[in-house]
Length: 375
Image (cartoon, rainbow, N blue to C red; front, side, top):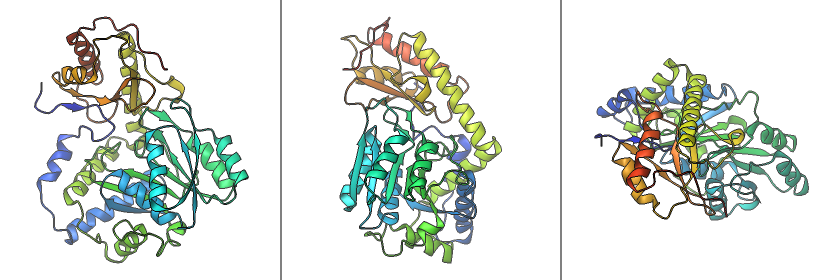
C-alpha cells in the first residue's frame, strides 16, 4: 500500500501537492494578508455561480452540514415552513435540521433511485400556500442521484417561494447559474469539487434575502447575517477562522481556474465516472442508478451476491492496494460507493477498478456476475 492512499469518496478527497503545501504556513487570523485571502475566496466563489451583483458568499467554520444548518436557521423565518423533497440520507438530514430548529416541515418522499419530480413540488406549493421555502439536495450522495435543479427552481419561483440548495457534491463541477436559476441560497464546502480540504462551509445567499434576516437565527455562531455584516464591515471573521483550510482552498481555487474552471472540472469527473462504470461492468458488477440520473460524483454499486462478501474485508483488501472506498448508505440493499472526484493520479479510474477486482479475488470472489437485487 502506498503511504497516502487515494480517497474514492465525495469529500474529503485526495488533494494536489500544491494544495497540501499551502497549509505549511501559519496565518494570523486578523492579519491583512489573511483577510485578503478571505476576500478573494468570497469573490471567486460567487463568480463560479455567476452571482456577481445578486449574491453574497458567507463562509462558515465547520463541515458542510454546519453551513446547511446555518442557511436554514438564518434564511427561514422562525415561523417559516420548509418543504423538503426526500430521496436519500442527506435530504433526510435537512428535514432533521428543520425539526431541531423548530421550523415547520413538510416532505415529499421518494424511493432512493427516483428523482425529485418538479410537478410534485409545484403541486405541494399549490396545495399549501403556507410553505415559505423549498430545501433541495442537488446531488444526493447516498446514491449519486442527480435531482433536476433547473426545473424545480422554476416551479418554486412561479409560486414566489425561497429555494435553498444543498450543492455540497456538485458546486464547482456541475453548473448552477444564479443569473438563470432563481435560488435564495446555494450551500457547499471546501473539501468537495473544488478539491480543497474539509473544514469550511459556505453559503452563497441572495443579498435581498440575506438583508431580511437580522435577528432570525437562534444561534450566535451559526448566524449568517451577523457573519456577513461583520465580514463586510471589517473583512475579518467574527471568530477564529480555519486559517489553514482557507489557505488550502485559495490554492485549490487558483488551480481550478487555471485548469479551466467548472467546464474542465465537470468534464474530468464525467470522464472518471464513465471509465469507472465501464470498468465495474467489466468486472461483472452492477451500478445502482441508470446513467440518465447518475451524477458524475459518486457511484453506488450493488454488492456481489456471494456469501463470502463482507464489506470490511473487501474494504481492507482494496485499501491494501492504495484506495479508500466508501460504504453504502442505502437501507434496502447492500452496496458500496466509489467516488469520481479528486486527484486520482496517472492511472485515473483504471487503478481503482483493478484494485476492486483484486480485492474481490482476495476475499474469494473471482466472478461476481450475480449481484444482489433490490428487495
